Amino acid sequence: MADFKVNILGCGSATPSLRHMPSCQVVDHRDRLMMVDCGEGAQLAMRRMRLKYSRLNHIFISHLHGDHCLGLPGLLSTMALHATEGSVTVHTFAEGAELFSRIIDFFCRERTYELKFNIIRPERAVIYEDKSLTVETFPLYHRVPCVGYIFREKPKLRHINREMIDFYNVPIVRRHAIKEGADYTLPDGTVVANHRLTTPAEPSLSYAYCSDTAYNPLVAEAVKGVDVIYHEATYAHDQEAKARPRGHSTAAEAARIALDAGAKKLIIGHYSKSYNDETMHLDDARSIFPQTIAANEGLSIDISE
Image 1 (cartoon, rainbow, N blue to C red):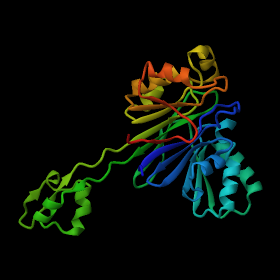
Image 2 (tube, helix red, strand yellow):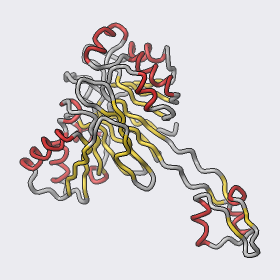
Image 3 (tube, one colour):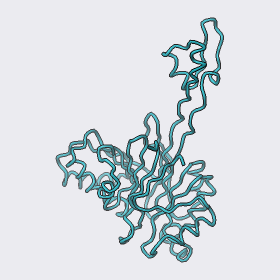
Image 4 (spheres, one colour):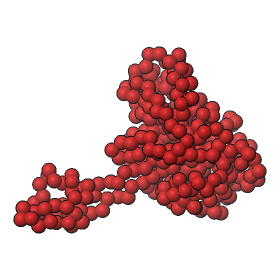
């Protein structure tokens, strides 16, 4: 099982269609689930993808348009019915926290978990951190305040070289520090360099979620060096004139962001209902950034591949 993957629950845009669900993804990092946007039908999509409510503790909302957040009341109510324990933190703007707090308090008075709200702003900031991962916001350029999210693994521990550890009789109590990069001093004062005691750690990975936004080179700067980028691609080239006035991007613009950011892979989504398939989107994006895949409901993407 992958340690870091993204599950696509919905990749449609604001107007409902029979082909796609509204925006919703679940990032799975070492079996801990974090939802990004929560469009209508999110709770059903979780069931279809066999994602457990009990493992979901954080929900990150990019902006307060209905296709990105109106699934919250149903999802949080269902989690209470399933006797979810612990806490659930919704990361959203102040207006969203006030609105959803009142809605959830009305429909779900008897919760089995603690509901928390973490207030975000359209700025670059680390808003969540645990022992292995950080989540940071960065501003996007939509018609209302909007943020993207970067999920970034912290540096991983180096691997013990068992043969050398045994050769120098390194005590167990010192081994964790050595994994973190410390040298080891022998009883006679000789310093054994860390690289002689360990082998390199696996590279840390990162994933950026670029929600609704008009094309802006500052987005590429914000996500520079990220391994995998999701970027909205509401329109193909045939409707390019609609994109900027509506605060959206084309597939080609999403590809330029990925190229300029130095990403390894691009995922496009948030398709307009006016398209019957994503062939044109993919052709537009791959002509600029060949490592592009089209989001689709039920798709799971391993960030390490």
